[in-house]
Image (cartoon, rainbow, N blue to C red; front, side, top):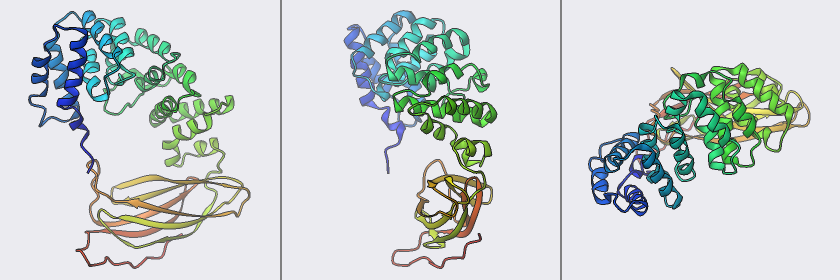
Length: 372
């Protein structure tokens, strides 16, 4: 099993931060800071660990914030920080720098190439809306891809794990940032732009579609990929305008055969299936699949096929994992698998998620016929 992310905030990450600060401020109480920062980490979850180390840092660095920010910039300039050692430094900025916008934003700009400031910038956008946004417009034109990415990521309406900033939930203020970055040479930046627009589409689909349509009309080296990723939520929902934006004919195409390797899938196992899809018209077939049970429907990407003409057929094979994860519970019981072609459910087949069979005992492998 992968190491929990919270365990990355540990004695080593604290040591890296302590070493960097002591290098730029010899009077920094390195040992006392490290001892307090590590004490009590064990039961804490990830963000609580970050805040715990940040509090220990503030205790060890009782300086006026502008001076603390100067030391943070000098520490970052050494190039030794990483996400885990630098995160408490950005959190310190989020908590203690709010009365010093210029110094705080300058500190985040220095740290973000090593440990992103996307969470720490949120309180500044909340309290210093126009002035903070003006600084971020400047970041969007920086030669540093990390700063350009921070301009988009830090202002996302629904940034995961971050505090919500009410005015960012409305379309408009961040669109100039996205226009600057929509065809950025860095994929790191472009993915953030697409995620930003996907956030926007959850609350304001019409505004998101208008923005994406404008980008398609303007063209660019990378715009098609950005638009496809940005519209993914709308495509999962079968939104006709999103399908048309990518050149697909809404509802066109069929699934002529859908078979499962086994209609009984053990918890922790995989559902393997094969489907043949047929185009109803020339152009792309945008393929999704959904796994349904009572009270739950999750949609996943299955593929994209280009049909030169109506009647073109494609066979697609997929394996869907039911490996347990901490963020999702998959109890045994009946399920249904849908195959979705250009926004329309084109085939459905039932299956059952069962308790894993004892060693040496095979699960029932009979396959139910699909409903097309």
